[in-house]
Image (cartoon, rainbow, N blue to C red; front, side, top):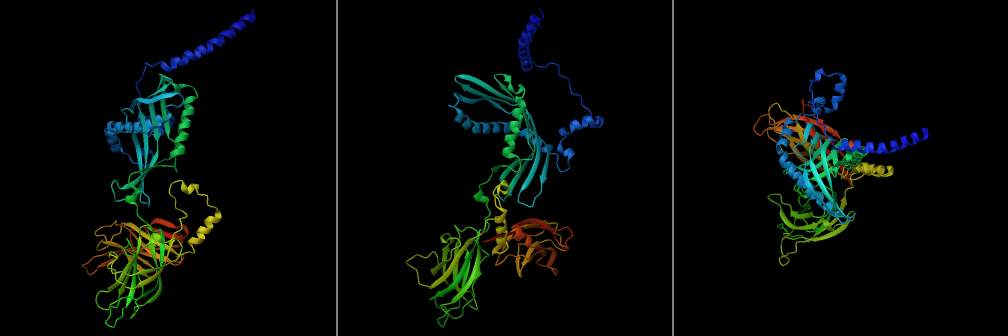
Length: 544
């Protein structure tokens, strides 16, 4: 008798357990709570320490951190614009998802995939705080704290072997802290070329998913698996230092061309030049410059009283676009009084040069480069040696955020690169971005003087400002790295009609050894002999 009772008890337990689990799970899915109590609100000063500790994650960042600003105006703007933004975002989601759906039609016995309903709800995301960071680069960095508790209704219908299955996404919650960088800043609307977005931490994403009316996310273990999976996938794509780059302007319209190499020009000699003097001779010299460059011309010495001068002089010109730039050559007759007469001219396209190979060129001088072949008159010949030497790629430059982490240079490669940077001919680029709080005792019309190795270069003058922005670049072609040199940067102010026409607003001496070793330095310097003045200078060293 005891054996039978034990047997029946085991059978009853085996049958009742799955039935009970099934009934409980069914009631859990489809039961609705009817007793909803109003939340009780209390001021923070009345809460105990344990309650405050639990509440801390919900307090906005602008309360906890002084670096974050309260942006109620932005939330109000988003709230008013949300009905229109929601429709625009849904249309963008549709246009992006439908081609992806089409790729799966015909596979796995799928007949069709379509949106039955697509709505993000009427609750817009809110920004709980915004941090704006200032950098020395041409960029604007923002770090918003975004929280979105939405009531979307997204229904996707999948037809598999003539059986329609509906998948519904509900109760979406997203908490994220992205870093939004607008760069580079350019003088073209919308004033930035790209939007770069990355996540500072793994986002919190929570949602409900119903398949055929049942919430599958309530299945034990599935919810946690989906949560971890989504976090890992999103982090693998956008967690800093990885990022999403959204172009806003065409790169060709906003790109600022930088020097990419050096053109070595050796002016050897000229023969059979025109006679310009009364005695049947000339005083020739050669002027060289590159197309698109206004202030980088080079001149040979003047050879007196000869039609067949020999110079054997070498010059260096910085090249920004070897595919489109041309070398402009003009030969003049020097006159002591009046303008110099042009003996002849010619152009030479740089794209015909092979990098790091010497090319001997013989040019027939013309009266004008646009003259037709019929009207050409022999004006002599000019003999040149041309060599285009491109710069080495910057050892610290990278095209994306991850390139600096994915470099595989060996220690020997980096050592050789460092040796070449400290032993090769190169170009020193000095970019004066601007200054802040420069104040003169009599006037504020600031300009900058760049003094290096006895050569002085001057920026434009800006009137009536204490925070000038010049954004001007100055170039120095050097035979050897300036390891022991300093560059003197001086801010001056000038008034045209005054007994005290010039006034110093401050100066700074910058050691160039760090620039040679690092390739680039971009920072702000406090001005000496200025109360609060600061100047922003970017230095680059490029070698061939």
